[in-house]
Length: 500
Ligand code: AHR
Image 1 (cartoon, rainbow, N blue to C red):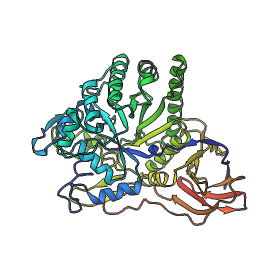
Image 2 (image 1 turned 30 degrees about the vertical axis):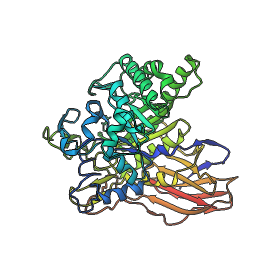
Image 3 (image 1 turned 135 degrees about the vertical axis):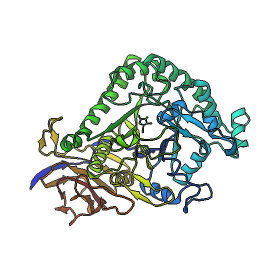
Image 4 (image 1 turned 180 degrees about the vertical axis):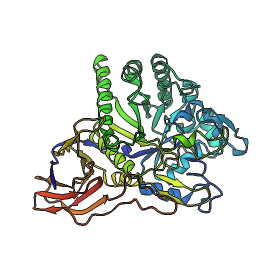
């Protein structure tokens, strides 16, 4: 058995974890809304048409913020279509995904759903086909108390109190030519700066996210961030990052190493933000909003067969397997390792569309394997991320060199009475003894070792059965007072919990 070491101290901290790092995303896409969170004819639907079985699952994930309404969808969306009497709302051709949008669900319905899910809304405005004018109107509609056209319109629509949405995205993936109203960096930087200016004039308390690159492989990556930040730096609080990984070549060792690429991606964007800060002699920090991340590729072929202009088709319905759960855990470890700069992150998405939660129209619900690492980290990973440098052996894959066999991160609760170590063993055949050295945390005793291990890499869950799920490990970590030692099985997700 191999040995690994993780020295931890409460004095060596990455930083306080912003709970919004456990955010997610609901787009008007496929069955995320219709048949997902909203299905008025469903046996569990509440008085607002929200599926209670889905709400229960979302609450298990403890999602503090949900991005809405897109995604690519937002770049062609008229928010006015989704408010007011439902019978008067127009059906529209939705160009981003080639479907018909009924608009029977919109802003006020989503905000109501958020309350029931114990979440806040992260609202995106359309900077594709629209601009500063419609964006500032939406802020007025949502956040202004009363006495103006749009705030009174909201009240007329039955919502007396303002929604007070704090976090706003200035468009979506504007660097990509697939985006409705795609722009050059200069065009977008100017449009975002002007929208930001007037949105903040309506409500100075809001926070704003500038669109960064759609992924780290685009031709314009780096330069896009530099140019757009140069034009909008002092007007925004965050820059966005998006990244989806796949295992199309069926090369699992490389697939599991892709979180290293995510780590580099974050480093680069932090560097660009700080370069522009220096260049402008600014005192203001721009942090990171990793507002789309996940595995996405299983549904590519099925999606090619979707009939155009239908409503709420089975779209982007990836069925995730065990190796996807391992990579999702690894990606979350990377996010926490950068908790000093990554303040917001959204698992894309939440229900049915590349999602941890799947439903049947009119039927049941099930948890995909990726549900569990997210649930563990969102529930146990609150507090302070500690510097977590695991010393273990490394290996090479076809695409990466020096991949550590183990990766992990430790989180200390705010009151310092709980410590949780999240760790993945990437090795296919080596069991590891992880020795966690806790010189100034020795009064914390092991109380749980939850693991996901022993599954086939391609094992999945379904509406009929969910074999891929976490269990308690055979034994708790052993402790000699200062060092706790846990067994990490090959290809495993591990949650080691310590309490005073
Ligand atoms: O999450 C699915 C899509 O991925 C989003 O609409 C878009 O922003 C990204 O390309």
